Length: 139
Image (tube, rainbow, N blue to C red; front, top):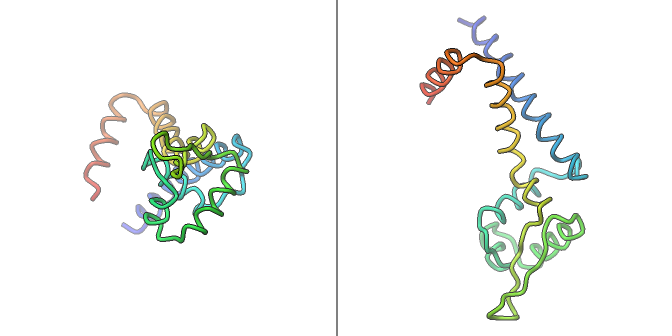
């Protein structure tokens, strides 16, 4: 049984490596190969919230407003986000992702889709059905 677990480890390690390569390619395409996981996490929060203000982002991430302002200013310089003034209340600004910011926020999902695409292209229909059936059993 140990030998099978080792083989399974190698197979999954390879899949994770492929996913990582796909993510790194996305980061490079955006010109931000040195972006941190924490920064990507914040971009994901902004992406998931849709309409998010500085105050709301501070609450969600458990940070102070000055910390959020500093982070958003960095993201603006990185061309990942922009500020948009609220139409109804000029004191409120929304944080919006640029196309580049969306690519970064969704990089993990995109990389996973690329791995799935490679798997689908490597397997025939029956093998793919079998793989799906097996993976559904994992809890």
